Length: 417
Image (cartoon, rainbow, N blue to C red; front, side, top):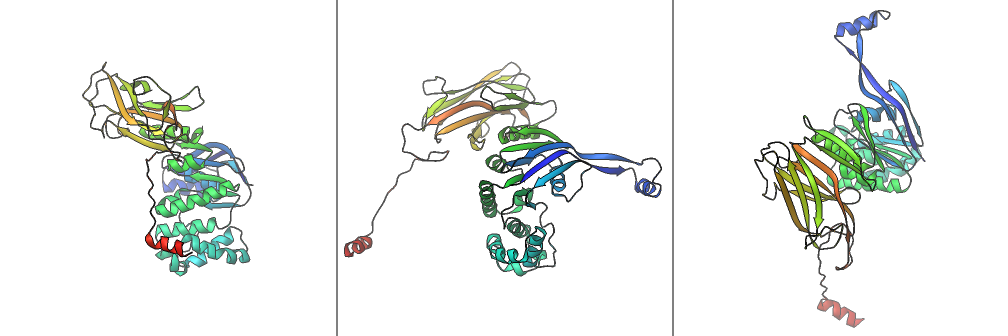
């Protein structure tokens, strides 16, 4: 079983005012310091226990790739230490370690040797590597003629040919086609079920929330947040949408969930209720029941336009359905400070059994990414029960009819028997 322990990890690079200052520092080692330290990561600490999965998220430049390079030993840290146990397989930069003039097969053999596999093991595993990569005759062609997707297929196939104790995966999987991404994540899930410890860097919210037990958010080289994947992803999305004079805060709810609230405050969300057909508030509904989501918005400053939207998420935080008044042709504006609007979304609860949460947003355009007045996650929680439709599985109810017919030839065969 593999573990990862990161303690006080930091990375700084020397920054010189000019190349002459760099040369002077080299030639006159006892002279004054001619550089300043530029920290790209500082004071990062976390532990991944055996069989657990940790997701790492953050905007480009936050230090994610640098962190993985230090964990895998390809870059030395300035401060702190990393301790890992078990056999480690890492998939970092695309095609890292591949020689462009060697064939895919030759590169696969060399990469497997670097992973510590013996020649007899490599020979035994090679057919499986070829089959999983699915690059056909290109396996015996130079890597320089490969597309980025083909390089990723081969690299992933080699790194996961034998189940590792620790698997570290960077954004490399994002360059592959959808088919291979699904195939790769199926293998990762299979490894997890067998006890592999996973460290995953991805911008894919669904991947982080469906695979990982915990997530950390890197922001400006520091550990901004660590916790449940849904709460961390919500905070990450709020940071992306954050604009000048806007705020981001998190509140612990009574049920233990973390609610993220962000926005400029030019318009704020008031009461949010789920109503039945009689207009009474409900927190449990039957499948296919007509309901109304009622949202009250208070306008605090004059605004040109107001768009209100909602997103239903399942218990893992995966989006199930979302829309807003922009797409429904009901955007409002201009509005004056003091205006109060009530928006009602009428829909049928065509959802599977389970618990769901609703995120609400008030903004000025098609999405909340332009000007976000207020975004509130977990604004409402409700349950769906199946009391009236045939049993089914999944998060969406699709009314289905089955028709079975038997051909005449089939009847004749059955009669002959």
